[in-house]
Image (tube, rainbow, N blue to C red; front, top):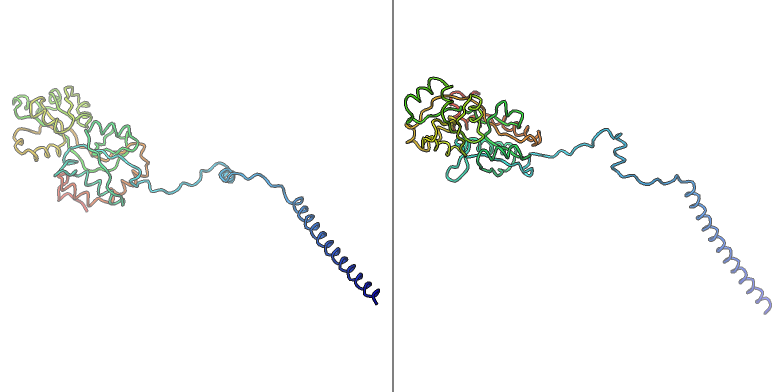
Length: 311
């Protein structure tokens, strides 16, 4: 009996050991097969190439011939920091009750509103300095600037804001013979001493007509004082500017006399050539859309008669 029990127990132990060995063999075999499978995938897989930068890949696809599309940016936003310059020259731009006003100032504000922009700073400086800024600063805008052939290719233009008449004004205290000479022929007028604003259109016009005795003033007020104090015989000025002088000082009306018309020229917003063309184009489109409002400004400031406004 004892022998039979021992035999059965021994057989059970052998069976357990056999099962353990079989299980171990199975898992070892499965692990080996998994390793062999992974190795086969790595051998059969295509070789990995080094990743190319996205930009180079993009350029190759486009054959290096086309530029990537530009982002559509609103370049007329104030953060482009256009520098706006003007001078004190009524009625184009002047101070009224401490506030900058005038036809050019109001027109510019209308354009900003049409473009959906906020008002931007306007620097008031002497004309000669403003003109140098317009020539040398890539983001400069100067107004109101007379547009004529010699300047045409120098700047970009938006306007015209108004058409100015440029005249010669004499002091009535001149001898009657001098005034009669001036009235008799323009060529005689250009032999007299004439006050002009530095780098103003009147200086250019008079040079072309042969005038030699020009006295340059910093601004309109200075130029008018030269004539008032008989430092010069004549003053070259816009008709609207001259009317503004008389409006501010009515007592001077009897002191001066208009003796000659020099020219009629349109005045514009002048942009430096480096200002992006799309910005200038948008300013001009906004300006064109404001024709009724601008005509009302021209009537208000004496550049247009009520009856001459077309529909």
